[in-house]
Image 1 (cartoon, rainbow, N blue to C red):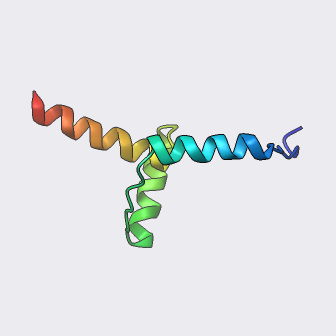
Image 2: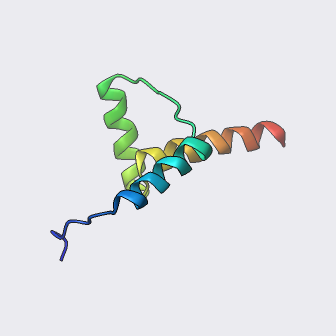
Length: 67
């Protein structure tokens, strides 16, 4: 079952694209490969994705600054 491929209709793809255009802003972040490997290992050790960890770190820093 893990090998099942998911197929989405064209209208579903278009809806997702429109949602992203309206609600999502990408923030490019360049890091050295060895830094990325450290970030990834740190995040995975805590059961997080790299993206989730970066977001959590940003919001934690922002919250700490406003306290």
